[in-house]
Length: 461
Ligand SMILES: [Zn+2]
View 1 (spheres, helix red, strand yellow):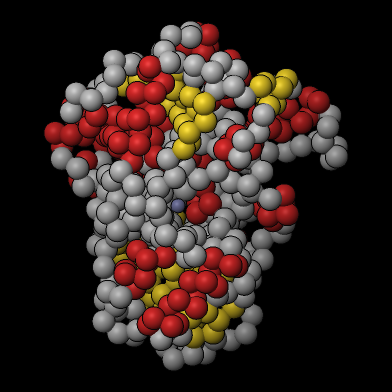
View 2 (cartoon, protein in one colour; view 1 turned 45 degrees about the horizontal axis):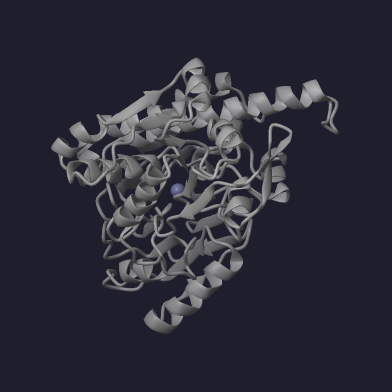
């Protein structure tokens, strides 16, 4: 390592040129700080990076700071702990609780996948090993330290930071980090201008170096009335005496759907259909939403009531019985992109019946079953057998936890002075580049789009 001579260095170890694997290394004086520690997901060439040697010795990292609990921001933590990381992992209190739920689920999936590969012997390797296990997650959780928003955390006499609300999922936050005389702002993922459950992203007036995500840097979300869209799908399914199946992400999207259903019930608009949340991870996440009222922009009255009309299914036996039942109802189950979880059993049993409806309420990644179904596939394989797609397929596309181009640009306009450099990460190349051109032309700022493992020396510190 070259001597920095009082300069700082930023290295983008993930979430650069892609939306997953977020990891930013900040080196300053004698400290190495990692902001986010995400898992690479999606395409195989990305997933293989999770197994590659880490570019620096994990034991040399002093501190990790997490912006939020999504797997692409926290899912690599157990690997670093297994490989010698010994420091603290700082995050907000809700992020700490949600990280445990998300890492445990991730470890279980990896354990099951490895066990299945070994039993079928279809792995090219002599033995498939999970990237990490539930035991590794328990060990990792001991490093996590929760904080309030706006609480200054002192790393040493040169470095301190605080969390500021990002409005993306419960507990999500920007990291505002100060060195002796410069300020860095790491956005993590930034939420909508008006999130459904959370407070809007905090306006920031000044920072010398800003790292901003760019997932929707090239798009504008459609402006539609999601509550009425949801109602129309429910009414149509009710008229057909069918089952409405909603694959949903366990964190934030599930609670948003529950909130919309609660509003429809309060307004006496919802047809008499029972509502079930059949997802242990969704139920665990919902309990955490129920614990942190103050972190949400809806009233205590609403939070206390919105979860009461839902039937929660945890046990496998109860879920199995519900899957066999063909009475009209609303089922919310994971996983959000129909790649795993209990939604597979519902679709396996009810996809071939035209009375039923499958409703997508979130982004469907390329190569997933969810994307195939949205794109009009005529048949889909579940548990080794093809099922004909006869049920109705609907989608609500305007629900998103990420700010779009217009919303992020408006947030940037809150800065009173331009940063020295704005880095755009967490985006596919065309998303980041479209957004870079837009910012350069509208704001005239200096914008960099870092590629994977690129390094920037910041001299004037
Ligand atoms: Zn996120």
